[in-house]
Amino acid sequence: MREMNAVRAHRRGGPEQLVHEKAPCPRPGPGEVLVAVRAASITAGELGWDATWTDSLDGSGRDRTPIIPSHEFSGVVAALGDDVTDWQAGDEVYGLIPFTMDGAAAEYAAVPADVVAAKPESLTHDQAAAVPLAALTAWQALVDHGHLRRGRRVLVHGGAGGVGSFVVQIAAALGAEVAATAAGRDLDFVRSLGADIAVDYAHDRFEDRVHDVDLVVDLVGGPTLDRSWQVVRPGGTVVGIAAPPDAEEAARHGARGVFFVVRPDRAGLRSITDLVEHGRLAPPIDRLLPLSQARAAYEALEREHRRGKIVLQVSD
Image (cartoon, rainbow, N blue to C red; front, side):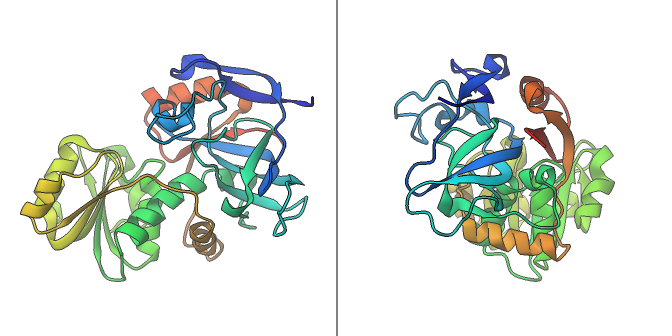
């Protein structure tokens, strides 16, 4: 059986379980494409998700160890499974792999063909790999769940992070008035992404700077999420990504509270690609690391301040 270089974990845990080793190269099943991965992006917390280790989102399914992490990828179609007609070998693609499947921290990944989209021509593979999960989370928070329209007011908590940086950019591109909280050293960064108001969460109360918000997208949770109800207008929405908003607080303020898990979505990726190709969206990358340093990359997610995504360079 053909082998490939991959990052795997044989037991459930954190970065300490990750090893760079030889692994069997997957074969694409019916409706799948085999992608030669060029770059893969990693996400904070993914090693703690039940779906990373089992075949169900809630962890009730069978154990899948050894697993391959990292579900955002950019690469080239290497082979087609049965019944795949919309891709050809050599096509440059990117996408988000379902969380209950092995990820992209490997030289090859088998991916459902219907979640793959054509890679933006203006991006390198390294840049494209930083887009799918973060941008789809932002798109689904703003458009699918937040029903954002031009002229609405949006508050983004954690606007400098891997997902928050996309929320700010997409909200601004869709014509919203955007406020974002961030660390003091990141205020100019979030303004450069399109934020009209940037609030230093360590020194200023966002409640004193922002009022009558139509939509809050929270990537922080805890007290920040709890305090957000104070600035939401009646009929507005709080979308929690780090934690579910309190239903009683939502009712008390005449607002909606939404929590969701991002899903692979080719149509959403195509809309995101359109923003990229028109210069309205750029993927902030914190750093690039080789696949062999995946453990260090995941450790950095847990302990270091970041602007944008950490990307693993899998192959040239």
